[in-house]
Figure 1 (cartoon, one colour):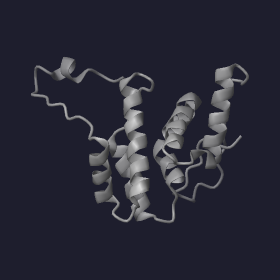
Figure 2: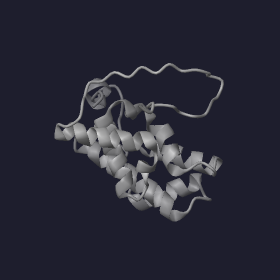
Figure 3: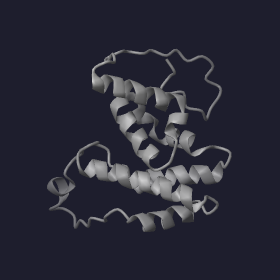
Length: 163
């Protein structure tokens, strides 16, 4: 869960905790970064990230997804309107794809908010494998090695690889 900032440097600095914005404020903030996105999409993204932060506060996940990640998603969608929300989320959250249980939890949060992450093959596969592992029916601890071919194409994430 990171270091306790106040314990480590609280006596050296004057610290001020700034809470996360409420949902409406976050939607307003996101709309300033992506004015062409519709309000429904902005609310879906803001609500999803608010739920992820809440999960972190309750100890369900370790990383406290901040407004920074939500801003990254909407800025990308504003700059590249031909990209869809799910692939953009995938680019921002790819690091978590190595932990299938966590990746599945994150995917379920976005599903609840109407963002169809199961349309993205690797998310769908990760969610199925995580459910199977949780029920005791799946194999766990597998190692997958991917050999990358031509690295000249930039901009597309290939992780996790389709198995």
